[in-house]
Image 1 (cartoon, rainbow, N blue to C red):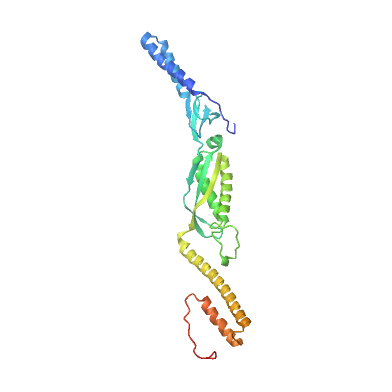
Image 2: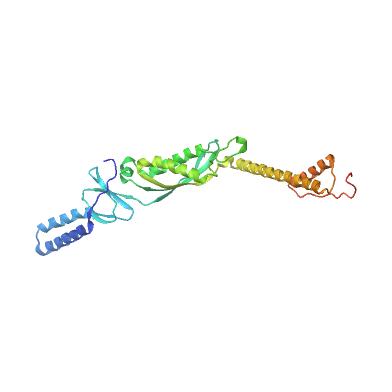
Length: 286
């Protein structure tokens, strides 16, 4: 037997009724009639009792007879099985696992702190019971290993000075990274009969030793991007201003005055502080 087999157990209510009648009837008969044969009835009743099992919703009982796997009871209710069976209870409910924050290196070698939230449940009770030593501990260890592998495959973020053009990063590609993590965990946990319902990155940040430096780097990148946008817009506005002045013939500018005007406009538009105007009460030549 290398796979799960669902066992149909006997009705437990009938055997419970037989136990009550046999046990209490034998006690009363022994007291009233003082017949030693009623002791045998009590022994038989006590033999019946260990065979009663209660299976709750989304629960199961794995049954073994002297080390031989006989099957798994998954149906809900009260049942009766061979009293010599060893009965192992395994929950089939969905479970949450929030891993510890691990320090790992991303694709660029930067140390990051990362954790995952895993939602899982037992799908195959045979594999969970006999193919691994402790399936709950197996989930914990394999989840940590999968997170470490995943973090090494992607960079934390894209930076222009690294010369990278990664489509998937740990920070921005949440869905893609989660899909890759689920696939990795499904492959690792299949041996234990575990079904992965969902896997998500629960925490992600740079490690403390580089967090401050990387924050400055991100701020610098954002400032450069903003300046690039400002300069692009300023050039467009200066071009539009010169075009409209020429089109409406409001003023005739030679090359030197045009250059001065462009310089002044660029300073005003690109400056990160409010410009302080200087009023020229003379001619354009002064």
